[in-house]
Image (cartoon, rainbow, N blue to C red; front, side, top):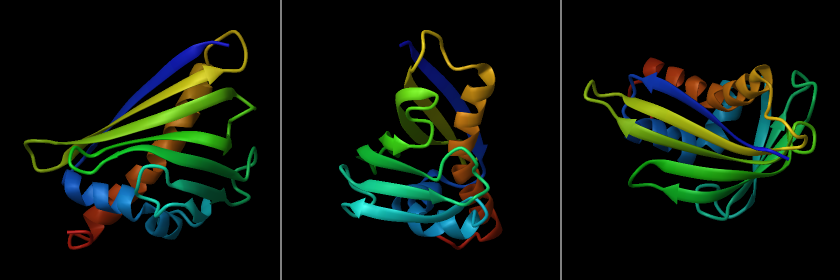
Length: 162
């Protein structure tokens, strides 16, 4: 087992407050509407979905061939500083590619009026090597796809989550 880290960034024209509200406070409602071909629903199993300890289950459509769901628990929800961290409890690549992983996403305002999204994925591999570049890229692209879809929706709908 080897510990690894994946880092990624995404620049948005949307202010941090709006992207935060849409992504992390109401994402369980918005994401399935924006990505219906990938995510069929997001169920809140514990908590309210936006508080520490909340458990959410992301249910995928048949487009995702390798797994049908991912269950996450919110570990950090810092509304003021726009930082969320969650750990994956089961599903997805757990037991297939990695033993465990957690994701931290932070949104920082930019001088242009938008924000910078930074993502850090920390994982424990199953084998004695890090994830391949392709697997690491797939993992971060899958997670950031949701943020990017919300970002595009907010650009197209400038009064949403204002």
